[in-house]
Structures are given as C-alpha cells and as structure tokens.
Length: 204
Image (cartoon, rainbow, N blue to C red):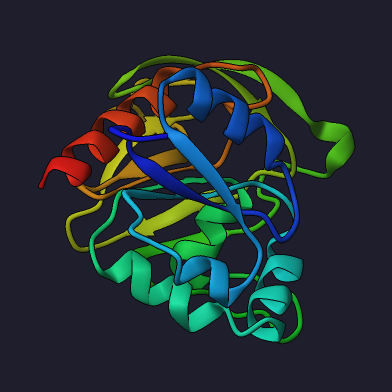
C-alpha cells in the first residue's frame, strides 16, 4: 500500500488479529512484527502493543532481541497505541511484576497488574475517555496508579476522566495507553485517534 501510514503491530503473543483488522478498516497498513529484523524494516509511522500476557511478552522480547530496537523505535517519537499488557510493557514501573519481569520503561507511569480481578472477573463496560465514549472489555486489566511527566489521564473506570475512579487510560502527544480492550468490541474511537496521529507522523 502507498500513501497510508505503516503501522508495526507487535505480534509475539496476544490479541493481534483484531488490531490488524481495525487498522486496515481505518485506512492504515498494519504489519505484524515478530523479529528484530522486521522491526528494522521501516519506515514506521506508528506502533501497536496489543493485549496478552505482559510477562510472556517481556520474556519473548528479550529472547528474540527485540526489546532494545522496540524501545528505540518508541523513543524516536512515533505514535504508540497500547492495550492492557501493552500498557504494562510501556510503564516505567510495575508495582507487582512477575518474577524477573521487566518493562520498556518509556512511559512515566506506574501500573498494577490484574488490578480488577482474574479472568473470571472480566467485564464489558462503556468508558468515557477524552476522545469519546468507548465500548471496552476488561480482562485481567491493569490500573495506572501514578502518572508523571506529560502524561494525561484520559479515562477512569466508572467515571469521567476528571472523576475519582481508577485510572484506566492515559495519553501524551505520542502515546495512547489503556487498561482495556477496544479491539475486542470493535470500538474504533481510540484507534481512529491513533491513526490520525500516524497520518501526521507520515507527513512530518
């Protein structure tokens, strides 16, 4: 495809196909990446870090020598969309890491894994975000317990972004990170904002 933003979708583990489908629907060119060589095949105009199991993703990134190239791509300034485990990967600090678990440490937030219960506690809810209402699935979702730098809270569970609920989505001018899964409900709200940012990156 030509004339559209090219998006690297981390595809080591977790929910990849839904993100790919939605990005195509929005007119982007998603490319699943599973190796350091694939990451080096830019240019990229955005990166998606999907949900899944964050400690497994961390181990695979290190095993396949993708951790540093991925961190470098993100710190270069390309737009990033991260869901659930992807948000944990971005975080500077994980309150309750699995044994040996690390993160990319590129977003100044602290997260707590599995903050809303186990798999059996999964739910589907409407979440009010700074970019509009989102039909969201919560599955072993993390909570953002602290933010720093230029990170903005854009959604709280059961409340408005300015309310008192648990923080479940954050953003900067580069990153949109959320605890929940809009890709599982096929809600395009946040993906649309991400693709708009990717278009700007392509034309920068």
